[in-house]
Image 1 (spheres, rainbow, N blue to C red):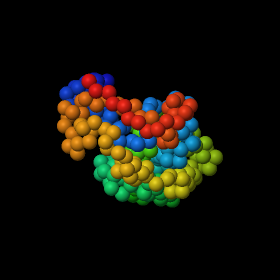
Image 2 (tube, rainbow, N blue to C red):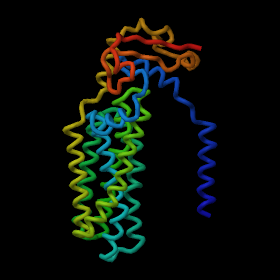
Image 3 (spheres, rainbow, N blue to C red):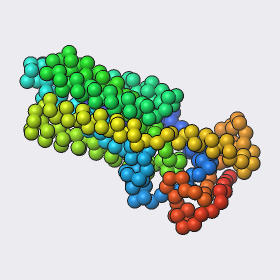
Image 4 (cartoon, rainbow, N blue to C red):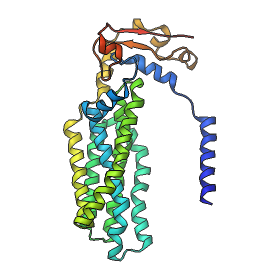
Length: 302
């Protein structure tokens, strides 16, 4: 029955994707053209991995925050039942507390992603990580009382909702369109490795101390992650891009791109532009690493 249900969900998703999902390549082409200092192509994976892991402040801040977010998520799923059960919580009560966090997170992130467009990525990431840390601290101090644990779960869900969609958006802000696939992939590698680390840290700490001690350790790590973002993440690059777009000469672009209202039909004429730069923006191409060249834009039209 479960297999049949899963197959039905997969088929439904496939049909909806075929019928309603539209490719965004034309929009990406226009966005790529607006980057005055964009790389002409994505850098080699080795270079991109170093940038997203430790070289670039914006990317490394997001990678470590995603890692820590999933680390405390793994702890919540693994340790929470063991923490509540010895104090008399029933299976249904444990299930309720465990389900509260993802329910709040899933619902609230619909609005928090949009909110980050208005107030910026960094404030929400910092606030979300610190909210998670406070929630875990409350859970560790709850003594296994279900009501207190439920309140902690709701708070944890709110913190995760502030962080989860905003981190992906911050990664996209920090790189140009052609650089996003490797950047997002490397970020998600570190984010999902947090599940592995969370299971190991929670298990080792629980054996060495107790369940409350394991939760407290992860709370401290989560707070440290939020402070890392506060100190290390630079101002949003979107502000710099807006200023560059205003300074960039529009005469270099074809009439279709200069128009303030671009129809879908005109957008289909535009493919990914080749942009060569004198000052690399983030991940320089092989051409840009070998020599510097003046800014130019080449357009391919059908």
